[in-house]
Length: 377
Image 1 (spheres, rainbow, N blue to C red):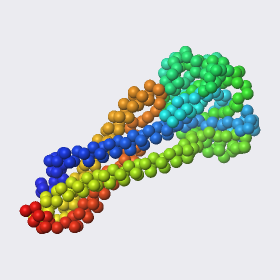
Image 2: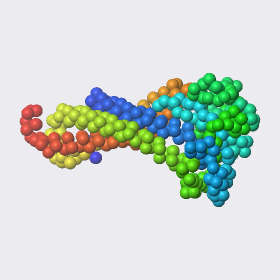
Image 3: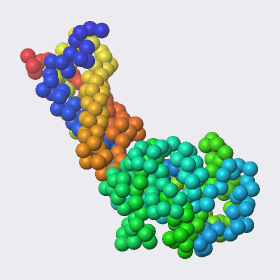
Image 4: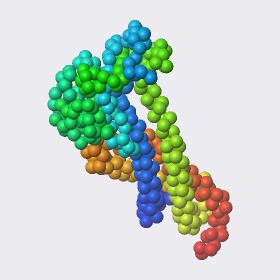
């Protein structure tokens, strides 16, 4: 390739003109990625907060305190059921980026607690396991940070509006794992709260069979008398609830992409106009307009690629600092390296390059190199 058509030549020799466009692209990509990552933290929070639902199927009564024994018998007799565990639970409220959300503290017997921990992939991080019948609880480390409690502190009490229990319940251990989990003794809840509803948690013989169990229970369950809680339903409800938010986010991203593309297209056009004598000279000595167009578009493409990479690095660094300093100490969730966020910024460099292509193509089609050289002379 002739050195005069090398797209890096102009970029190296004119940093004062190329850096502003690169910085604009970097800031635009960082803005879009940051907004999308923060919005996606809602999904991350929901799937972490209720992530244990991946490994079990919940069943609760409707318009009753307990589930009819006939319904329970049908579920228990399913071949897909490995263990059907009675559950009598409390809940507390945890703080999230978008407000408070209920967090279940499952009241299970010893076997149910052990199986729930094994299936959810959590283990004891600090403290000890709870004893049946005693006002004790286990919660995940992040939940403890979120609530601002430590081992030995009361996490539920009669005076609390967010975490009620008729008798103070103390934290005796914290759990570590990919999902958040809260556990207490079913015997305790049976004794203190006999008039709150009693449910069941169904486990498949293996984790791989849990989705088959979901479908089997859904098929035989009388929806007038009981409700099934399965992870696919959680995903569906989350996407449905956030659909309008995602629509607004996509509109905002579209506006940002169009505005930044328009600005960068104008900058490309201005810089191209300032280089008309150079372009005209190259055209007059025999370089085709297609090659000149390719060089101009390649220059813009390189600017966009470098600016986008700088924006991605800026986003990761900025969100990592925000997560470590402001969010993680409070038990709030954010993923600084969210692949979907960076995918949604890809239209930005593509649109800018396409915008530059059409504007420069139009200018080249109307270019008269002889008149430009004569005026220059």
